[in-house]
Image 1: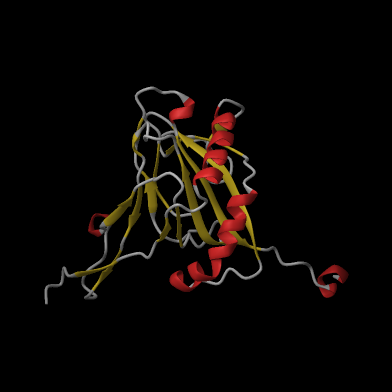
Image 2: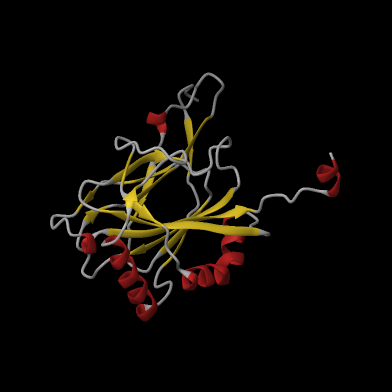
Length: 216
């Protein structure tokens, strides 16, 4: 066997189409468009950093209780498929808008050092029909594993699968997975023609201080 052999392990992604249904998704899209014409701000990384070479989009807080209810209904099945437990978690999410030229370079939502409370990533897509933009796929990278100790995996060894940002679809994956948002092409440039996504996580709840901690 060649010392350059690499085993490429595909990443499991749970994708559900027609997630909320025609009426509920239309209502949510209407609220997203209203938000896009309001006070959205440039998206950040590492908490509060705006780095346009890495991430270019706009974000805002967004209430979507119907989405959280639907996620809760499928959570057990998703946990089984992804082999993750989301018991005693709380959601954290926002609305993201990608317009012409916007993107998000390859990254992890939980790199083992930062954001380690994130146990499950979800992305719910919204857009007008017919789709008013091109691109914007979610690219999920496979995991390269060398088959011999002589080989070290490099970024160039990775392969991937692209997932279309289809309206009223949702994807779930582990937050440690490398992924990116491909560049969006939106000729009109109008906010209402954007690629909308409710991005979020189910996060481990903070531990409450014990009586011993409180006394120390």
